[in-house]
Image 1 (tube, rainbow, N blue to C red):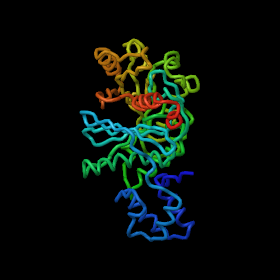
Image 2: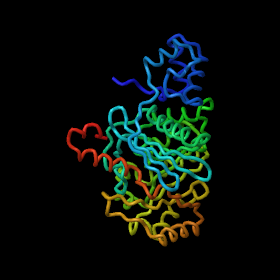
Image 3: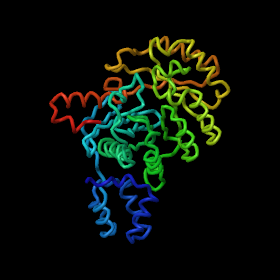
Image 4: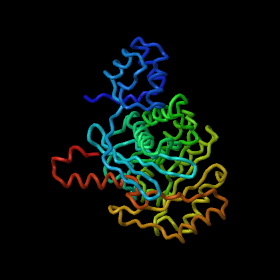
Length: 365
């Protein structure tokens, strides 16, 4: 059986585990510094740590569990990684360069069961959740890539928007946040971390109760239940009214603004009438939310959807603005590579499965 990644332990969990085995609390600080400040990839490199402690760690944990399988680099500086997990499954992680810093988009599940009809991530159903360590290691792999190729560059922002529904892997996602925020290690500020959900209303409220002090984005994508159910089957379980009710609870509890994500699909949800309906739906929440309009990256398997024309995007934007709704258009990254989330993974799995049945079990995510 494979050993788990030590990246999956929060600082408090690591401290408690070492204490249980008779080691003093300061050992945890030493190990933490080696992992996240010095960024060693082998326990043998913890040269100044207590040898018995290092041996104990090596007996129970590993540091590296992900293997880089494919890497695509875009002309705009975006880098998309396809990592192979210990069980052979494939996941995607993306590094994006912004004016405000370096952002990494991480994946939380192998596949996705939410079933958004426009999304490449859901082409292959969820086979399992990722451990907290597997999510943290995605970030560490990107940082190590930067250490080797752009010394001095540090990941400053995180978006939990990769393959899967983060709130369907809630506890591991929370542990991941606590690891990357820890001031003794990566020290990524909560205001620089955004978690995106398709609208699991009970989990939105639990997220508010945890008071993690990070940002929340909700994938709305339609201004009414009929249309949202057509493109997002999750709306059958959690209709718009329930999602917005949970959002209101979050707003009141955390006093933090929320982003409403809205992907624009040609002749489906991108008309001025849809924008006006969205503005009415937001209503008195105008000062508390920002609508982020997302130009669609076409996916071969979802040929019924096309990218909205630039004029339609601008008209949608202008309609929201005239209704005093805060709105932005997402800056696109990696348009010259497999830009859509899950696209590289699904292409690679089809390619490898095409080699023969003997390869299929290794990429069954």
